[in-house]
Image (cartoon, rainbow, N blue to C red; front, side):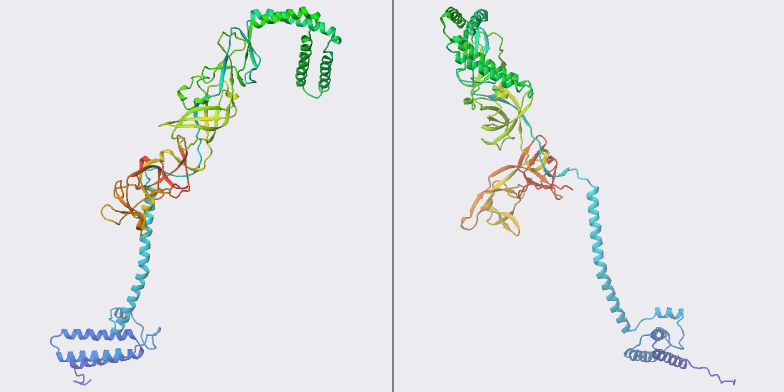
Length: 605
């Protein structure tokens, strides 16, 4: 190589050559559609320009010219359409190295590319936000609900509640009753031994001889003598029966006795021995009739015997007394001395204090001698009898005269159910005097002055609740036409300070005329003046009435609300209340078991 042939190039020349190579490279990349390499070249050019600005010895004019040229070139390139790079590199183009990828990732895009990237990014952000926000809200609500459920099941309320169902209760109201009958007692008019013609419970007619009181020491001898005379007369009559004036009557009676014997003898092999008693009774009656005919026949040959018999009978009559029934009725051989005091015409005057200590009356002996004035028997004139008792006023507040109830009356041997009618009601503060009228089974209690009984309660279907859940609450009582409605809420128009001030109310229950409202500090109270009616009928009504209502606290939600009830039946533990009322208790409601542990509006959970 010749000396001086390699001439050293000036910096300006080097710069021009470098720019030329870069422009050629840029043009080549543009033709090939290599956007990444093209952006890299642009970045290098921008970096070079920034570097030139930092050089103090470089002329400002050259720098400005170079920058202007670069801007013009970039604007021309941006105006030309840029093709997407193919998936496979063009032939003859080298594969990008790791260093090239690093440069591409750190290369700033063009204004158009930056605008496209910004729009795509915003769309992605919006799509992400629209999908993520609902999911986030749903997740928050789900966590909140799960937390509430966990708290409810983990934290047990100290207030006991229960669900109500249909049911019935047994209310055996056992009491004692005083027995009152229409009856009278007959006493003896002489001392002696009574001889009764009827048994206890038998029906006796008016003026029928019930018993005879005899002086047995004198009458026994006289009766024996009379029987001896009758025997002699009968023996003589048998020997002359064909000559008797009553021969045909005696023959007919004896024939009937023979027929009776023949009739029952044919049944002896077919029936039990009970037929013998019936045959004996009929034959005895026929024999007595025959003997009466013979004894009543007045014959001269029997004159002496008849005179002796008549004398003995007169003496016997002086030694005994026959006692007859003054009025017809059922015979009873017992007494207690209250027959003239406890009579049906004194039902309103008789009190429960007349109740004797013993239920049964004093029995009258059939064989024991009696003194003058001792009771001989008692006759009950009517089958209608009465039961007087005192019952708790709260238990029978719905009873009325004429109601029919079935009473279970208890004796020593058994319990008898009897339908009875309420004859009299006298209400007291705590107890009510009740008189029942009965028409059957009087004979079963004829020897009793008092009896224990229980009332059969009909099975009323209703909601069964414990008595501990029942509470009394005082409610305001206002006419129903005072209530108006505004914005879906019930209330009244207060007229204390100004007309038309709407006060919301809590109507607990109502009837045909009045509504009953709960009281609170911020609601209506006694003394307030409200508007009643509307239009021409509008008047002012001052709240002055209150009324107590029985009810329970219903806990279907987290708050306890007072609900009125109507009690149908009640015992010492439970009550049956009416269901299916508008404002009342409903089946499957949850109530507070003990009303003393809660107040209205208190939170349950």
